[in-house]
Length: 92
Image (cartoon, rainbow, N blue to C red):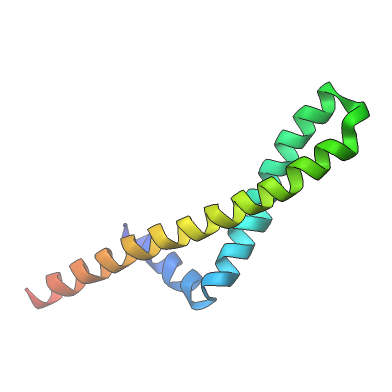
């Protein structure tokens, strides 16, 4: 992790894990993916509009939740290793 990314992550983590998961994972990633995939499917089968939305919305919101959670875990792991290395560089 680079210092710029570490400082951005330090700010993001102050807001909390679940805020990050919901904002980044569900609202940003999940809704974007839902819009893209549902839009492509609706363009091919407009008569199935409600079925496509009913199928895509729960799937992509769940996937967004998982994406946000795994992104949080990966960033925390990277940040902790960065902080440990930075501390060892200061001490050593």
